[in-house]
Length: 340
Image 1 (cartoon, one colour):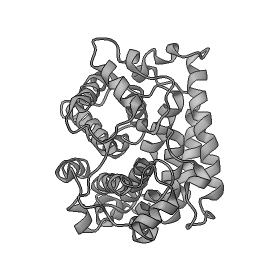
Image 2: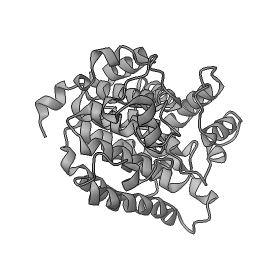
Image 3: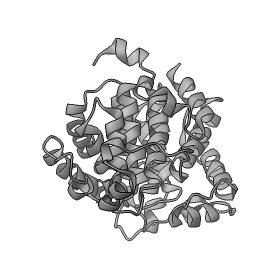
């Protein structure tokens, strides 16, 4: 770990800008197969940033989560009883916003409508959903300095559970935040998957009751531990697939063919990581490979960009791209806050 590089690279700024750039690059290619993407936009290695560089609900909800975190940390420590309401409020504000017109996921919309009611947030959570909407927005908590592992994991799982209550959505969000944190701290990409697998094994039976309350009782699981294990085991399975191909995957083949199309949380994590790990020192190639996929291209590319930016910092992205990204001012504000 290079501590000098870690201190100066502005990982938070790099990661948030990378998330938004990936989101914008993947926005027009979502729902389109790779041959059509190439026929419409040209070779994947030359994929242009759209003009205007508009983002989707992925970036909008990441910023909503960031605002919720800031509300709490401006006045004290990040704790479950202090975080749930501000993030809930931010998600409801996003749900009601006229800017929420970017084809948002059904789970988020249904859950946020229920979150606007006066009932426990656990009643809004969609326990059958493990869509990537849970972890596409979790990056901010991986970038907040000074958190304990328990705070980071609990907050990552809580924000997921507000909408996506499936245990795999919780575990994948936890792992996504963990990956962003490790890369921001200077962990080398070559060892990242091994560290994530170890983390998953260590936490496999852990249910964060302080953060999640009685969420698990709404499932069919016999215990909180069984509920947690179900999610971690699905994430471990996809991490094993990723580990087997991370160094040998053909860069010209759609990454979705190796680790899944990314519509569900664990596949979005694995495929976003695969795109990053194939080109860890080539951030624009990471984004373009992730955006030129048959699956949930904007979410895969948003995650891949968050990983690349956390690893390489703010200098990863060309100034002419960064200056065109939608919500640039908000992204830079949070980056500066957490890089300070």
